[in-house]
Structure formats: C-alpha cells, structure tokens
Image 1 (cartoon, rainbow, N blue to C red):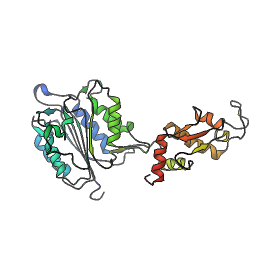
Image 2: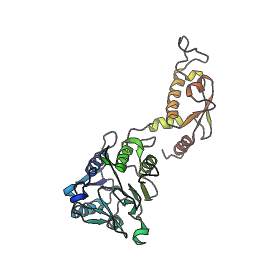
Image 3: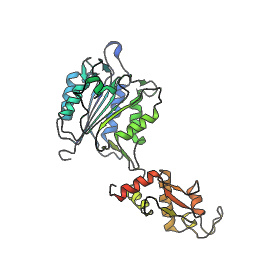
Image 4: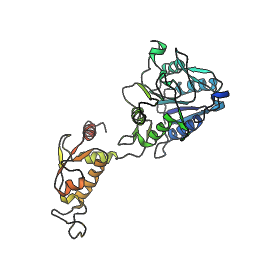
Length: 327
C-alpha cells in the first residue's frame, strides 16, 4: 500500500475501572471489533488495528495513540471506544483506566489538525451523543469535514450492556452489521448503512443511536460477500432498455417446462437453455428486491403465464447507477 491508502483503527475497551465503576462487556466489544475490522469478508486485509485494553488504556497511552492515528495523510482513520463516558454539563468525555478524562473536544481537535481523508468515530459509552454537539460546547467545535460520528446513545442517555451477549447493546448490533447485516448488494458496508441497521433494531423505548456526518460521500468500512457480483448486476440490468421498461417472459424460461416432465405439465414454448439462465439471474434479482412480476406473485407463474417483470424502485436506482457509469 502506498502512502495515502492506509486504513488505521484505534480500538479501546475498558472493563477494570476502580471500585464500583467496573464494567463487564467492553473488552469483549473491543476484541470483537478489532477482529471484524482487520479483514474483509474474504479475509483480505482491511484495517491496521491498534488495540488498547484495560491497563494499557491510560490517558497518556490513549492520547499518544490518538496522535498516531491522525498524524499521517491516511485514507481512513477509525476510533472505537467501549467504556465509561462522562457528562460534565459543558462537554462529554471518555474515561481512561486511570479515571482521567479525554474530552470530546480533544478528540475533535485531533481531527481538526489531521489530513486524514476519512475520519470515523464510533463510541459505545454513556453520553456519547455529546461528541461534536455544538449545543454543549459552543460554536468553537464544528464537525470537521469528511468526519462521521456514530454513537451508542443520545447526549443525555446511558449506554447499556447486555448480560446475554456479554457485549454492549449497541456494539452487539454493530458487529452484526459489520458481518454483513448492513451490506448493500455489492457487499459494501458504510457508516450510514450501519446506522440504519442499528436504528431499525432498537425501539423508541431503548437507547437511541446517534449519527452525525460532514461528508460528501461514504467510505466502505468493510466488504463482505456480495449478494450480486458487478458482472451479474450489469448483465441483469442489460435486459431492461431503460429504468421504466419491462421484460417479457414466457414458458421457455422455466427449467421444469420440458417435454416429458411427469411432475409438471409442459406447454409450448418449451424450456430453452439460454432463457433458463436469464430467468435464474432475474430470480436472483427478485430475491434481492430489484424486480417484480407484473400481476403475479411468483416469477414461476410470470414465466408460465407469459407475463412481464419490471424493476422496483431499488432496481431503477441500480439501473441508473450502471447507466451513469457509477458501477
């Protein structure tokens, strides 16, 4: 990798706070996040991860690691923290293992002085929604360009742990999203898709994730196996002249419609190998919400009754992306 193409992640998890401040799921959170970020779904390299756990996560070590995270002109810098958060009414803070504050403003200042192309901050701690919240720390702190913040809760809320999963409630959903739950058709997982995934999973009565962004486009945090390859997507879309057009099916597209089939009554035109392959691809489109039959519920019935299929709104979106050369 050349300079400017590096992806770095600083992952921090603290359980062993002093006295009654101990937590139980934060080290699990951090270890699982580190493993998820290191590689993509096909085990190719993703992030270079620096992990600070418990006694290593002192204020001094965290601040030094933050400096190293943002000191170069890297492609992506990601900060993940699971531990105690603090609300002092003016600003929020992360709490280090030695019970020292790392003010949210200090983190924002690090980013302000960085040349990183994409900054991602993910916090699973109480009051984490205060990060870059100008109502709390005045107009001196503005969310830096090319920065995305995803937090476990709103500015005035606690972040909770799950006794069942031994993870934070937020991070448990985050990990599921990174494993593919929030990927698009091409297997790309963005901060926005992660937020949408977590947001849908939590009710109005639970802690609410918080999302802030000052970006013109989203970077993929992790890639997993695509639901459709680019080749399949382009080939399938080529059967539609434009986003509004429909594709005509007939019985020759159905592989069971061959002469002599004792289980299914065959009708003309009989199955043709070329058309069978087309329908198999279009059925994959149907399973992923890209096409629907006209006046029928199932693709089989559309073929056997010589009906048409059309692109859904999602299908039209991907058709246009291909037409514009964006895919």
